[in-house]
Length: 111
Length: 112
Image (cartoon, rainbow over all chains, first blue to last red; front, side, top):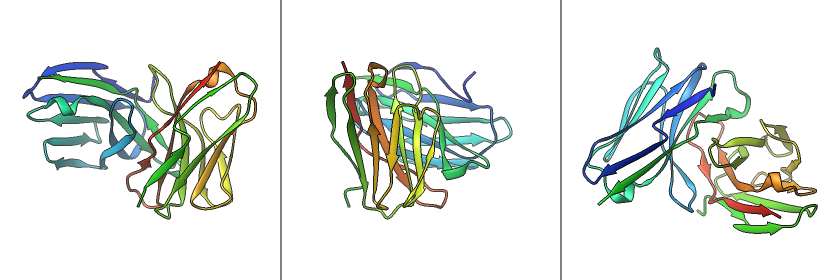
């Protein structure tokens, strides 16, 4: 079992829909990251969370430390949101601030 | 600022050939990382560095070597390429505090 599990693996939505991507982890963490990867492109950081909730534009990320679970929400989705969304955790007591990654969720938003 | 720059972006190697991937960052970050990304798997850490002159092994270090002679550069070497090393390679950097990591655009390597 992976230390970081994402669901769903693939998600197709219609433009305007509310989208939720989930991330569960099985280890103690000091921080959780949400990343975005566009086709053929690099990876960009969306959020870093250690507690509570963060919002940036139409993106909202939440984390529940007790339940070891985080969600990424996209409101009013748009075709340009189509990308792979990756959850990554920084484990406690890890040298070099290393991250452990989930497999990613492929999101396709159709017009 | 260019951020994190990887060179080259694409490469095809024959089995047994060697090559070096260069990662350069202009943010004065202490920590640098090399990952590989394969279909159906999350990013996996190959090697990392917590400062100039230091390197350490990650999850999948076999077949790779690294060097960090200058703080801004982290080199990943393949001494004798194998088809199993066909992958997309990403470099990342971050500073010492608990902040976000910055990633390069990736290098697509094919070993035939």
